[in-house]
Image 1 (cartoon, one colour):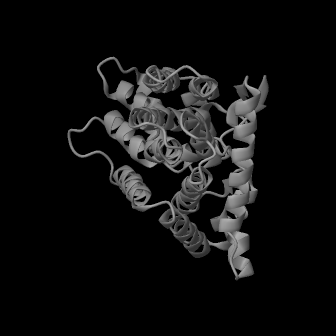
Image 2 (cartoon, rainbow, N blue to C red):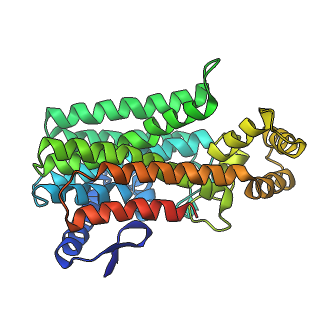
Length: 337
């Protein structure tokens, strides 16, 4: 049994292990090549997060999905590079919107060089991803464009908030499906499609990716509250400090506003609705949410989406790649505690 990829995913087959390791190494080379520029400063800023590391969750999914066709097909690695470049670009932009200081254990690009450089570097990465994508054919371009539209729509919906009468939790889950699920779904789709897998497998893996991506983000929500370390690659409580209502907060609000809500629920909800830039108030809010049942509700939602992702795989033929994809569902749940 060998550990590869994010979360200590176990691969019990030497051939699959070799394919995954070789695929991820090729993606890493592709990322460094794609982020080079004739302008040294652009290379430095574009490679800032590449060199900081990361789970390479999406490239891993591309390489595993490709096992249902020919994993050595020439489009597999470039499509994984495209998906990861797109993801990295969104991180540059997210850190500007969130005014984040840390990303993947290093200073964020906006903290180091300012917002303008961070935004333009994200744009540069989008451009490089598009350049690679153009060589993968019009269908790949269309798929990526649709996913990017969903990603941006999800971000806008998050910023706008739920419309009147819409359940905030349902709204938030739709936001996550767009912001995170869409690109993870594309990772699985590209891997299967570029490898020449049959249409049924492509569709199954795409739906699996959508649900797994949502579970992955929900696990991040839980980690942002529950973790004492930097497991999520960000300072714990970052979303809380910035006033971003993640799922644990939304569950708390729902309890506080219900007939069954207690004075303690309402007091904590009011604290969370206030200014948490003060360190003492932030620490109090974080401690309160860690001890509240709302955090466990968010964990259960994470488990539900991971189980749905796992169930989607049932029609696929049994193989070590399928087992690895099932293992990722377990690993996502494990991250949430």
